[in-house]
Image 1 (tube, helix red, strand yellow):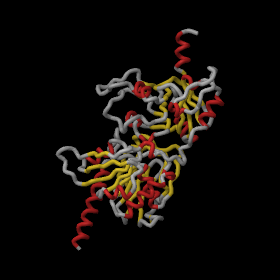
Image 2: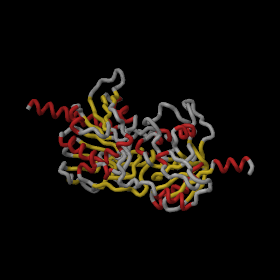
Image 3: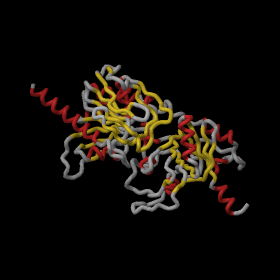
Image 4: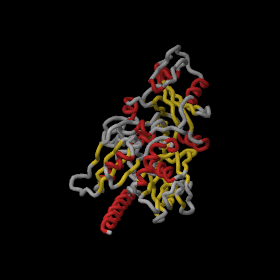
Length: 412
């Protein structure tokens, strides 16, 4: 075998879908095996923010943009402490980054953090497959993981334990089907911080409110956007009780984005109901929107292939303004979009405040009788767009109104 053939064999990677379809490409990032739910992201930029978004925990992300890695990686743009994606699928990785802020290549970071990827895949074809069949479990296999006798316990970082023959297609498919489903998965605790921390307003900015932000998979830009408006943000673990949250006497409570199935997040729902019962202003984003929906008594359901990207059109029904927004969600709230409805859990009137113009999915909830609202998308939008940043101002206004009402009540 010549050197070129040997190199090609060493770099071979295989992507296997749960329905049995297989695509071959080249190793990208770490070599080995990874399993997860395969999804696609339509963003043309912002791959570093995508990779470090905890909402992608246990998901293999396919980038529809053909060229990935052009701007490299740096230490400033991460949205959390690590890369969270289970695997990464790209078509044409950059041979070298070209950006003055680049400190490393994307490939180097993927390899250093053990993220198994594949390149050379026709990602448009793969996206059409997922849009037809829906998201599903998948696996990326390279190196020793393509050998028979490989121990499929990817979480243990195991490698081939017997023989060196190539694994059959049936063996690889069997490993994929052994992966856990995203339906019923409770994942927030796995990505949340263990200890609380505080994000202060910038120097010279007046402090106007104190907010407790419950970390269900929070992105770093979210408390930053609040701090820019004069809010002191205390970020707390997902496991913190409502009693401990309320003991901090916050002006408002925030529930973040995060991974997993909202139908499995019963503890978060109970916590939020206690906060709503205390009449503390509430704002939720993404997973936080789904938790509010459940707390109000509505159901949630899994979307066929979800919304993931930075180009989703959403209408704010209060202003009739159409915003281009950033999304990352595979579940949605099942609430009436044609009328205001009564909260099945007894929290008064509820309005669907935002809808996706592509498919009419609920993208926001507004409570009309208690101080609470939420949106399904990402107004912090790192990296862009910033059409929906005004929602943080709405949260400020909601807390100010609650303070005024409390003062007037005290006078009376």
